[in-house]
Length: 430
Image (cartoon, rainbow, N blue to C red; front, side, top):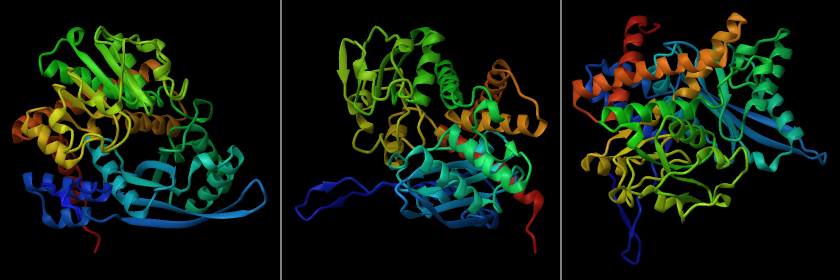
């Protein structure tokens, strides 16, 4: 889909408006459907969420005042299994955002061949404005409002922006108290002490590293001779960088919100604090050069991993990207306009729904552990994750060759074909 530029009153060209999550999800659905012989009636069903729940979440603040927030849970599709997706606490949470991200989760679970459908939800709130006690009260009240629409066999939330393992523990506890029995499988991403899985926090970064390694191998780049730049040194970026470093790649640049550091001879990633270890601590680490986040995206490297936020690769800078391969660590870091430019320049972009799918994959492992009341070792989790990621890579690579399409489109072809086949098999309830 071509992007258009608007002109301001003084005649200057303005950047096109960012595509919303829902617009992106719908565009990708149609793009994949054009490649496949899919019943158009099934495509029509997939354009719409199964249900969207909007709830009011009142809490008492620490000063005794009552504040009322709005929460959402969008359940897109469950033809392959229970709904699965994150809960975010962020001021910009909206109904349409949850619907679009829920559709993305449907595709991500299908690419990984997990027995889940997609969902997404959250509360429109600035989590930084809440004390821990207020966040706990908010979470427990949200659990009560969602009680009848979530469950280990219906819809399984997980952490997202503004939430984490503690949030999931509170939600699980509140749900369990309401149900009268401990139900760890109602959420994933919990602390291991209460039914969480070893390796869950590191999983998205680990999967990005696994896929980056496969991409380098695919394009005949020995990892020992591969240079890598990582934008975003948080949970995903730091774990991906450290693993690739450990496996022999040369990490030449990393950054956080304040900017980055660059050393063409390679950085010691283990000594650079991640955002979790020391928020905004990257620039405090000695390095020959400092770079801005924009400059990092344009470094001459073998592999670029945008692992911070969405929409950082745009029409404005895609022509200046000098990386040979882009592996998406963040969700939606590449706009549709940038995608077209990079494709025209023959720069492969390995999409987020494949590369960072380690999080939902280990969430699946956690769900299995909870249902069976039997925990796995970290070694088993990592071994199983690697096997799942390699299977998914091989399947997407086969579709890419078969249909002669870019990596992103190949991933969506895999996802849509699996979801559509399940709908075809189950049929439509009269």
